[in-house]
Length: 48
Image (tube, rainbow, N blue to C red; front, side, top):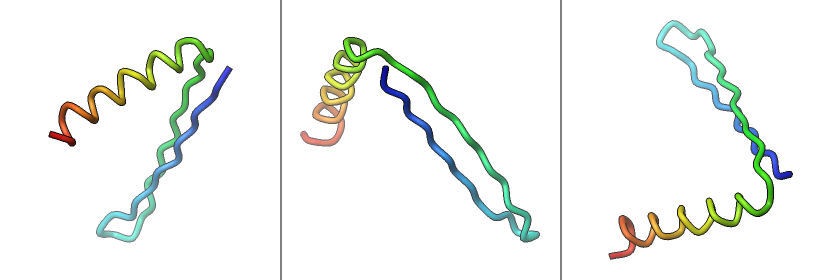
């Protein structure tokens, strides 16, 4: 199992901080398929 976690934050005009935390887990076989799909999208939209 591979787990991805992302923490993001930003400060609004009033100086208040807003946080977001997201994540997901994926098994290795599906990760390889996801990785290949993302690679194809990057090639399609950003390389040519």
